[in-house]
Image (cartoon, rainbow, N blue to C red):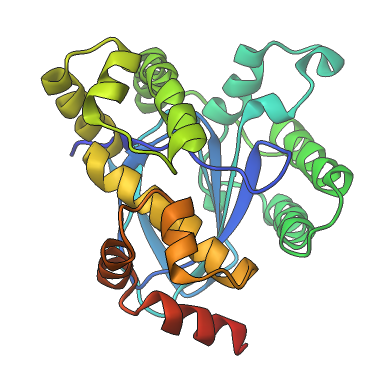
Length: 287
């Protein structure tokens, strides 16, 4: 099963985020250099990782190391918290650890909390709930960092560790994944800086040092979507934010987000979101 590379967007100053998820829609196979931790809150979350399918029941935790492909299956009536963070969030010098040693801590631990002592699972659950609250309630970065260092301490000293061939194999391929990510980052940065302007396929192909035909295949293979779809969805994401953050007209928002006309903006928005921009704004402002 092929997987695409995901490059998360961080909501704040720290390279990490917390997400609340449910099982009503599957998550396609993907990988990223960030650590991911799944905390099952209700029901059962079914995920694929390292060639196996795991069932993570309420109260259980699953750790996904850097660069390891994974996916989630549809599991109605389930709820989960998802934590993603870059290891650069830690001060490796202060910890007297190299970045490689930090990565190894998460690569070598027992991934599923069923393999941990119950007391360790309880401690990590409390830490994750506090971390989730710190971000979602917009607490200070210091409070988030406090919980992240507590998490690291638990992973290092209390979570059981072992080395498996499957993880070793995944780590071998991680260098290639990171190299690809480094090729994609300038493209993402360019979109962030120029999304409100016309952007052609040739513009970004030149930026990547590829011809347009090769870039089209490269981008689709590693992101799971075409460049045109990605750019369009990025512009829609920006537009959905502006719709509730200010009272600008549809024409102003369309222009600010790089759409050639209000008609195009309204058509693309309704196709993606299932409702018109105006109805979307009214629905959100009503809450």
